[in-house]
Image: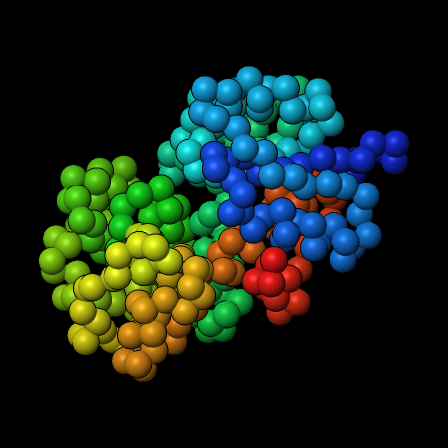
Length: 283
């Protein structure tokens, strides 16, 4: 990805739009990088209601914003507001990263899949999507990004189980025959010989229901990851670790998905390391 270094006279602004947004850790992450690299810039949280989203986004370049992140509930709406939508954002059906181009156009991208893959590659050296089938729990927007990334990375098959089977069937229609839909109550069976197992649901998150699918049939050689990072070690990951699996928490996905946007907005590619993780965890 190319970078655009702002003119010396301009202090670039970026931020994250959501509703609500006070819980977001993105300002702590980008603020840490701005300070680490001595960049004169700002990254701010913006609580924008859905009915105001389009107007707010179109006004931001006039206020000095070079880009922003977009989170719930605006990730799908962004596709209809943007002038340019990348192929991967269109395929996933949602976008999370905005670039306000110098030609005045609004460009939307989805970097969740990049964040997912780079997190696994950093935290589980030697992992390779092509080593075997992947099993994914969930069929929402995050699942679409994860499935797209796994297929692009060479997974021979991606099995999907969702509490509402219809949503999983849509994924098979959109992504093709390498996606295999499994009934939710058969989720314990689909992981038996899977090389990669992913929870993309909110089950196990603080304040949500527990993840109750049994993992006793899981392949001990599998890599298991959860996109939830509150708590950092979810019950799902705890059970997988007890079964002998390598596990990767979801915080790294948040950190790595932020890298392309920061690079484009502020002109420098940031590193994701232990110090970065700690800065976000302690925010």
